[in-house]
Length: 273
Image (cartoon, rainbow, N blue to C red; front, side, top):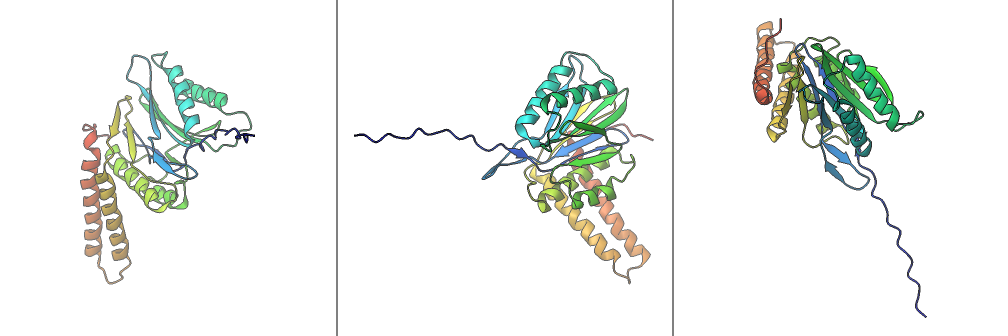
């Protein structure tokens, strides 16, 4: 008598989690949003962009998004948001916020506790806006915010120092700073890694995308060493004021050099007063 072979039940792969790090800040002349690309599974990892650009119908106006959480849920949110904006030429800031909220309400039930986080940036009448969501809860961001595992004490510390609690940085300085902060998360925080993706949105809704490269992380490594050198020198009590200023100027020169390379993807922006 033949032995019955048990039927094999197909097993679904565990869902990918884009748990790592996303960061956005409003600048004096635009908005910068960036994220790593590591997607973690139970037993393996792979890499996907965590930034999305959603465009209005016909016009070049855009909304930029970053996520941390479920890749599947993010794809649904972006797709539905594209359907919302793809049918119209323009929307006010209030209407964009309402549309974002409506999409999240449809994706997440009222008591959802999935910890899916997003950053949503856009411009309206040359004013820049930034929203942060956790599942279906949405709140405005005044200057900058961070999502994911990278939203740690390290990243909060660095962002508080460099981005502060006021809008004061031009894009040309905010871009290398944001690249540097993401690089630090990838180096020191679990579940963060891969390339860095970065978008820039100007008040007139012009969109620019930085091309990921190993040179970016290499420059961030040089900046890290420059900061460490400055802090070490500042702690030396026998260093006079002139020598301290030289150390600071050296670091500033390095950041200016990095800025020109980080900003090579973006045409010169108008200087704001």
